[in-house]
Image (cartoon, rainbow, N blue to C red):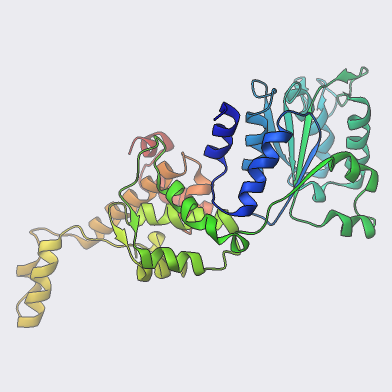
Length: 352
């Protein structure tokens, strides 16, 4: 099998007919420089597809620059995309290249293209036509060679009809269209995706496993958050049940937030023998003091367990605090506060 096909098969996970079509699309699109428009619901894997397309293309040795078109403040859009010269506006203390220059020779991925402002749509169309950008405060045009991949969860044809998206820009971007269906429309992909997410970063298999009943439960779920939601559930399971065989009941609790690590309601079994004694003592009416380990502090134990779970979440999220917070269903600010309370830093968590 050619290297390109191997790379695509390793990156694009699934057994469905839809995923087979995605792989076929990538194989022929990789050899071209044509603009690609990827559509599909949020969380279905559009950026992974774009990144894979770049990785198997002749531009793979150059930069892949991913930009969320709707996340840039309006007053910074031009500076972010086109760069700026030193002193061109307040705060421009240094010359800076924009996204187009950074992607020169490579690929520029514009996610949520439907959120782009009308003014920026005009500028983008011009760049696609003449291949040149001008920095804010600059006097010269700079030639750029960029392969354009755009993505959106919106129907751009509808936005065109409402006058919210330029039709000429749409045709410039949509030379090669690719539609990625929602996960609940390709349920054959759920099990291979779960097995993929259970693998550790070094390629080894996690000790966390799912029973057949748990797999069926996951396959029956509607997945409104698509692949992103599925990954979140699997990552949460790996953190809370790191060495377990997980059944459908545990999965149901995870998915309905019955286990909330931030509130220390995850499974905690530090003293299994003592717990058995405590239960027996309660049945006999004996003193609980005799059943617990000497000098046992529930408060101290809960703090240690909280620190362990926070550390595992950070490690699973590669040190990205926002992603780690999502895994344990906490607000980012709350997660940061707990990190400070436990003197936990990203570097330490990654080594955990």
